[in-house]
Length: 392
Ligand SMILES: Cc1ncc(COP(=O)(O)O)c(C=O)c1O
Image 1 (cartoon, rainbow, N blue to C red):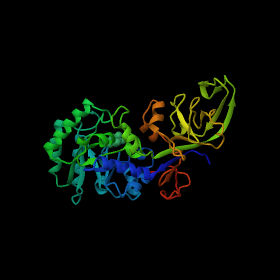
Image 2 (cartoon, rainbow, N blue to C red):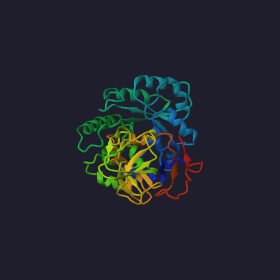
Image 3 (spheres, helix red, strand yellow):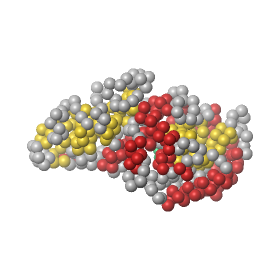
Image 4 (cartoon, protein in one colour):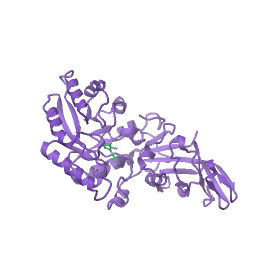
């Protein structure tokens, strides 16, 4: 079998969720599992968190349905709301909590509730407090909320917003967003749901009733490196995904030899090249620069040459013991305990950890584990013995 696997440590996921709760002790934390749980497999992650998380959040009804069908019973928040009124019967009957961010959605929700006189729903009214993506203008929010709270079919209205710069220390935009949304919350006396991962970790005045941590659950530090709490958060979070493969061939090259497409890398001295079964056809970023680190048997070595569709090449000259079959960790925690942070790899690819994690394609089997390193652990979390090709 091709040796590339995304190992998912569900205990690390649970640990990171507890860290979110610890940082926002007065709030409840809805686990954000959209985009297939940031590439980790939403059904397995949802079941791992089901006894801890009082609610979970996904982008849309299709993502929510996959969780409902797998037996997840807690409230499922639809972060983009609905796209067409025809989704509403399922939303109401299925006990989803929908975000409402535009006037036609409010009209459509209230109209649909007429068909469901026995049902009462929870909605989240999204205010655009300054990010200028989704949401009602602050001056429209009171009227929208009054319409909703007056309707007998609405059980609960939460006030929601999203921050653009919560990861940046002393951000004037964050200060302005907080002032807008906290004033509204106080005026309207509604429960608030504002904080993403960085705000959960470092902005207590954003916590209120619900926080919405996403990327931190997967072990990614969401704070900018210059943030004063960056180091502390690095220590507190555990990587969840370990992308692991093996060396499948070794080339012994003289000085002056090219490696790979475009001959981007030309050897300067005699070089041992390890060919690794992982490429952009698996979702590994083709933009990985010369020198991007990987771990071979727990030791850092650099990528040499362009990433191709199914393979990439690394310089293993410094590791005479390494050869065909050597274990390669593209990111995550190696069995020896050495960690290569996905955020560090992302820097080498001029991107962010979110895109690397969500970019791992269904071609790569996910293997679910409980606890520590992944070698030799039973794969009790997944129903089919651990390997799930395209988890929900
Ligand atoms: C509306 C909303 N809430 C919460 C999150 C979680 O954000 P993060 O992954 O930064 O914690 C996201 C993610 O993009 C989002 O779009």
